[in-house]
Image (cartoon, rainbow, N blue to C red):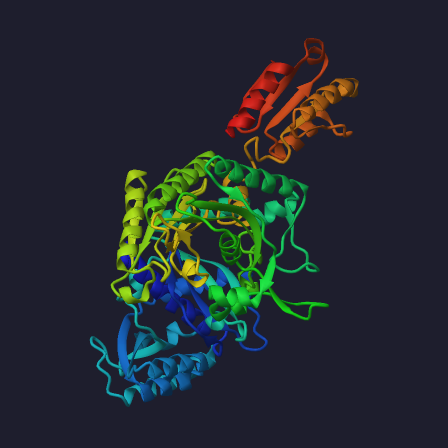
Length: 632
């Protein structure tokens, strides 16, 4: 934890939030948990029947948190045995907390840690005058019970102090609410969340809040969130007709409109361009397969509940929509007989896979059920790992340099832990593989950190995290070694001695998925796409109707050169036409009237650079063609 004080403040604030909800909104609300996470803290509640809590209520609740902080409540850690803890929870009516301690008891816990907040008994009536009566009555009973336990409470006793809140918690807190600045936090939003993340459980109300070192840091982050909100790909995606989510089609199954299809196709073609001259062969596999395939791959035992099942018609067989491409690619490899001279074998397929993601986790294009991975699988020898991974890293660097996302990226190298028996491949093979990945990280100058014990049982991996234009980090590219699937599918090639030898499989994805990467790109560029990705590249605006013919003539010429251009023939005023093109963030706005027609030129306005100039048609075509080919 980089800042333990800030973490303690956030965690303490989650307790203050729960207390504020019970004291000012609903004294019989059911509590679940309230952790500190990154820049946030939150608490989960189920409000009583008839109590409706909305985001417009956050402002008043925020004021109540500030009031509690000014009460200078100390945080005191107290330990109870199971019977004592259960009695307190029962008196509080916290049935979900009983579920928690029963789980801890089952795991062998006998002592339970609680944190209590108190106020001076002499100031009780004054401080609790705006607190719900039911809450006060309940805590009077709690105080009476606590007095029977002869607790060691350090600097105070229960005769002079009143316990105003108590919650089960193990993590550290500030010593007193006065250690929290009332201006360093802000209740931000509410959301729905299933208890334990299980859809079978009741939906809870999660109240999120921000907390930073001081008021200025909080303000800066709130401004960042406002900028992120403006870039939200779900809003821009609908507004600019990039993709559609249809209730009739289903959640998490985006439909790409013409604008979105253009961006998607450009990304797919670029990814293939980066691979085709590096020895990759393109393959195609069907969208479903029999369960037998996934029994061999191992997915049927661990992944079946996340897969979509399809019952055949006349065949009367059960099939599954594929959740990943690798088992299919194993079958393509196994249908060939390769020797060491053929290795490595490289397959590339931008294929759509399907995973039954939870409805509550779906989000625009960032989290979907139809996932088009720019998938690739390499089958190679141990001695070839270094070169193949180097090539993959170079592809990743080139791709993210083009997307202007290489600055500030980082890489995680996931390696085995100490329990080497749970990892496949054998010590010698694994050591060579891990050494190869480490050497690539070093030779390619990657900003990497090792994560010991983070590797999957089937092999080590590299994960790449990139930052977008406003500094948010996204985990995107990945490169993973796999000793498991070659073994399960009994894959082999013939080595120099004429014997069968097992290949290593390398899984790699550059963009992770086209859908997720498009979500990142929409927000990264805030729709102001570079020329190659822009669905609408050129808007020609004639100053008056008399110049429509010239505008259409050059539009035809542009389209013949595979440029996505159009003419604004609308009845809008000239200034409104320009404004509309700028709102659409079209890379080039070309203005034509008498002088341009006579000189065979256009007046150019570049959206991104804000440059304005006049240029000949042919010269403009050369300029744009270079920009297009170089993917600037």
